[in-house]
Image (cartoon, rainbow, N blue to C red; front, side, top):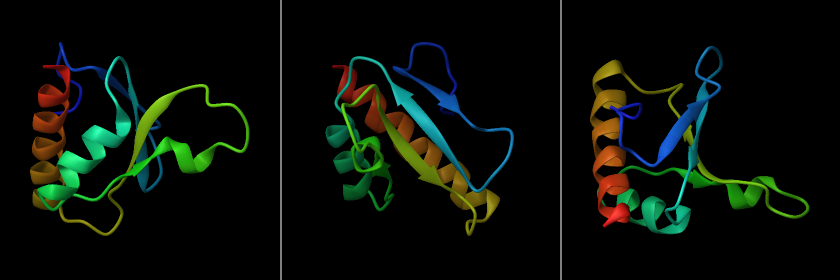
Length: 87
């Protein structure tokens, strides 16, 4: 759901681990995170991971404690938030 053509982002780090990073292009990470949070999906922005100048915008998406159906539902919420942010 998050790697569909036309969405303003690219998944990074999806080959291992308990989280991925969704690097965003041309949309505000705070806006997307806020829209997702309003629908029950909590993600963190990349802002908290920079000690110096920011080099990218994105979201950190943890999935380690979720079932596959929860991950699928959350990805749909994030997809919708990304689409709304592009408008």
